[in-house]
Image 1 (tube, rainbow, N blue to C red):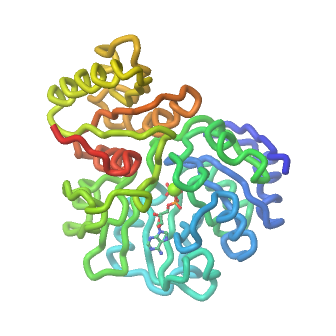
Image 2 (cartoon, protein in one colour):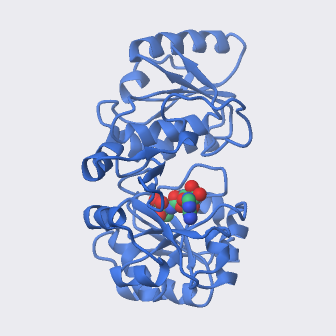
Image 3 (tube, rainbow, N blue to C red):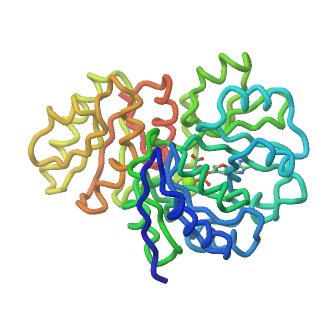
Length: 348
Ligand code: TXA
Ligand code: MG
């Protein structure tokens, strides 16, 4: 399959170009499109066959449900059977934006979208291009991140094509995604809403609005390390084994310098996913993927996935990553770095 390439302006997209992409969706095809978080891979969310194409193109396990993306509030009533007060409050405050809400589903949604669950994840993206594409398609768009399953999410059209060229109908390029990590997922079917995935809307922002929120224990965001690290947890993973440093920053840098010396004498090619500040301290034999200044977690989030993908084109034998503080977007960044490292964590 030849993957068509469309380029549009992020803020004022050419409607006639987006209409061509919408035709592909209406015909049951797949279109990768930009959102403010990461690039998504869209299909008509009400068409079972179209949605099965997403799982096929990504190599995604069929029990991992998809998010439905909407552009108008009136779509919600068709997809969710009830909208509790907490969900209304979150929608009012954070839509359109990087927040996905899990609600009880209606029968309008094919089982393949929800992985057989009785709930559905819904989000209204802030990206103009994304919302225009949804409107022109005339249906909710089922869309996971547009990467091969297990690989880092794409934040550029180039990264989408690196994984999915020839497997999808088209990609719409509107430049790099602003936020760089996926949406926050909150389950609103529990008595107290539950954070299932940290993302673009921070935990602090949620607490301010909700007062109370539970955190899914499986997140490991309270410094719990899963007992059996392994394939089950490998996710967002670069192509070489990765070790994540956690702890006070100067101790991380000391340890990084020692690890570099130790592995360099063994003749290994070393990659380091680090802040700009740390990149400047590294010896020349280390290949650095710079995720920006550690004083700006926004910058770190925006650069994270391209840093994780850097070693695809510049292969190394081993990767070390510098951890950041778990405040604000740092919670999402550390969640992704831990998964990318398959929980090979070095606490200092
Ligand atoms: O920012 C984003 O959310 C991006 C863009 C494209 O919108 N999408 C994205 O989709 O990250 P995906 O499929 O890579 O991640 C969706 C997450 C998965 O962890 C999935 O298990 C969870 O949402 N999810 C989907 N439906 C669910 C449901 N009914 N209950 C619980 N979790 C659900
Ligand atoms: Mg994903």
